[in-house]
Image (cartoon, rainbow over all chains, first blue to last red; front, top):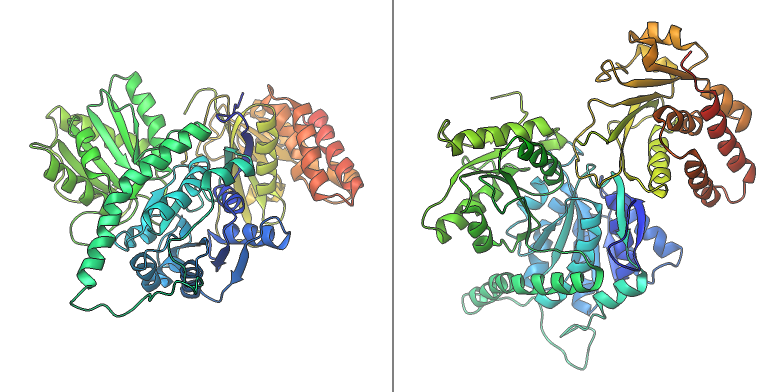
Length: 401
Length: 193
């Protein structure tokens, strides 16, 4: 029997997009400006229906492009409104310059983002190239394994963004989660409302009694200090993220941190990954454990800020690990998550385990239990000294080698 | 994958409601206390093109998010798909296939190239025409699937489908009654002969 974790919770069957739209309705931001794009269209569509039906008092701005969506969201936030948007892939790419402006102006915008491949070639399916590309934009990035996490992350994101004064994006894997109906627990409107609280901006342009300048030119004299403050805010947001998670657990019962550890206590081989593939990995781990292979998983939830010291500490205990990236940097070296993980280990640990980096699932390419099992078997052989770890980026389930 | 998990693949043509059937099936089983997943296969979306959708059903939480390649149950909404799509792919010697057809299970088994014990037939198009007034085979096939899987609660499925349809067809009570009758009839009429 499916049971609720929160005493007043309600079990529903909803897709990732449906729960994200539901969270937005409950958060009831002052302004949502958005433009539809597959596979995030439903979020905007369902939310705009809520607005049309009078179920949420939000001012919905139907803009003509994603660049305008982010511009309007920035303007609303600057004016003092709680502002949100949603997009995916090319839409996020089209927002690019405005993403940096949202972060630089320290605006607590929350974005529902559905991970999808970038063109060309054109592809509508799930991979994390879009948000991985935005990893240095100064946005907090929170990834979700399933619908439940997408819903819970959206609710937490509002408080994280507002306390850290950093824009925050919450993502799901395109189609795999955005269009998969599964079991989720939703909370009563009043409880969500109480949790997110009222937004009281420190400064607002519409507060004409306290005028201030925003977006002024900032040259050699102060630009560097302001950018330092942005980077420092990202570092400081780690505590805020944990505090909000702690409050969330007290209120709704579900536990969140920077990442989830699955069977890591005695793990000898581990996979580090992000998103829906982590769920499949858990099933593989259960099977491998029956065969005596001590497999574990670190599923990164908060990728920006990157929890470097924490991950280094946990990973340093294993004999071999692999990072599975659902994006390729095309950098000539490794993929994004691996680079962060190995830098964390190098900076924090005297010696590090053997490691490998795999890219998987680009453009929605299938990642099966067998694929994941193969990675663990290789890691097991590396841990036992039978095989050597690859020194180059490896690819899973691609036909061209 | 847990031994107790049930995996289902639906075959239909764009517009026939294969996606809706998978969603309705999942929602209905959730109300009977099961963990569920329902997801369509997305490609170029156009009327009449072969489409697939999928379900997972389990007594324990479902964390797996890869595709379904070896379904225990396959539901075929449109018999014309048999010549267009490899509908028995991954079915093996144990999987069960439910076909909307006027032919017998023997005839269908021969056509599909699998054992007769694996094949179930029901004339869902006829049932829906008689009960709903249109050839909409997806709702009756829900009833057939519940019957063939065996250990599921048909009354729970009917109750939930009723409440879902009541929201969707507030002004057309006859549509609700027709759909429920079609599910019940297919549940009773699906056969292995």
